[in-house]
Length: 391
Image (cartoon, rainbow, N blue to C red; front, top):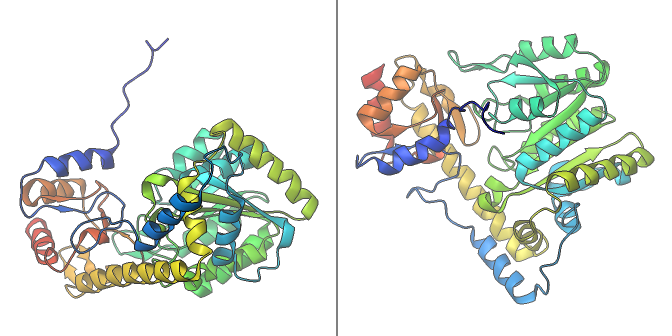
């Protein structure tokens, strides 16, 4: 059965975990794995999550299946954060719980492919799973340059050209905020231009929103995507609670789908449930239930919001601290201060990345992508000196 299978290369980021763990260098820095870290290098459980889990322990009376749609109240509780308190979409907008944002992207692509979609416009570099998911569901990724890493600038013209050359019904995949892996986002005016072209060309927006709240705030991080969704009669949005609730291992996500009419929405919803049933049958309960409890309690919600603000402030402090060093060789650290979220991709060759690892114990993706949360006031000088040594 398996004689013709060929070895596949190991996942580079997963390799970094072991390499970092086995490194005895006391100055080692982990900038690889994409989880939030506090100033001490930990990834703590949110205080609001702990309290919500305690309440669940007290009141939850069953571990029975949820159904393929997951937790209705969880999906409803997230909706105003994403689409606005009075989004006006009514029953045209439906949502289902998914196993993480990855599950949401997969469910979106499978459903779009089954509806006849053929092509997905995808800016590069992008989250490494985007391309494989698109291809695995039988669609073609149509690549364009999202950003120029050498100059640390957005290539907005490449997006506009790709959209204007696209056919009606083509999918355009957009990062809602805190672009992974570059941290380079669209401006408010650029979001408006994207919305206009989506409407004019009859394109279908698929928005991946994995870091809401970590850029400028919950409302600010949703302003652009709301313009695009308002301009398009149909769209989908994949959501992750990994980062902004710290629920990485619980796999908490949701997929929202907007249809032309309520009747079409009901039909589409039936297809979402059917595809979800075939993929994972029922989504896991605990993480989504925890989010639901937090968002339904004023005190828990306020504490969670404060914790996200603290995360965002720390990320921005690290970016500002790096930006003070301006340029180190060909690496524009000043640009890092203008970017958003967890990630930036530095202008480093693979050889330079390996030198940072081998000579200085600094671990990052081979692409030069760094997780800004791996930095703190104590290790930034070591990081910059390492950059200078390999420049």
